[in-house]
Length: 102
Image 1: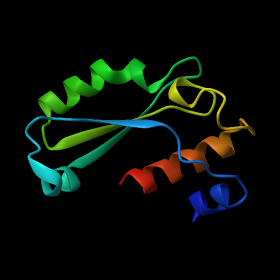
Image 2 (image 1 turned 60 degrees about the vertical axis):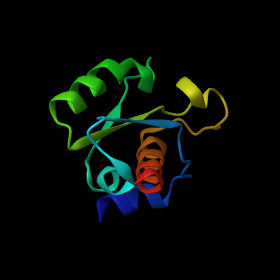
Image 3 (image 1 turned 60 degrees about the horizontal axis):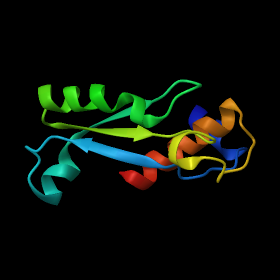
Image 4 (image 1 turned 180 degrees about the vertical axis):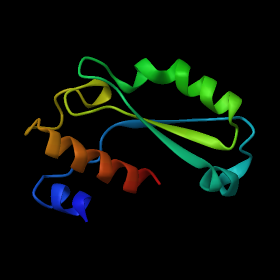
């Protein structure tokens, strides 16, 4: 599909990420079954900017877990992942990170 076309031409990297989940998810099986909400920050941010919102979401919806992702050149990734810094690379990175994390 369209995602494959976008990601095929880009170099994919698994980005730094952090899970936020409710204490109600007891054990790996429940964590694996929880619904996933992927949260992406803006151009000047990092995944940590969304920590409070993610905690509130999983508090209100304990069957969800949030994946906070740092884009290339942001947050825990710093300068570890070289360019290109394009929309196509961003899509490929997020796809690779979600596939890796889930």
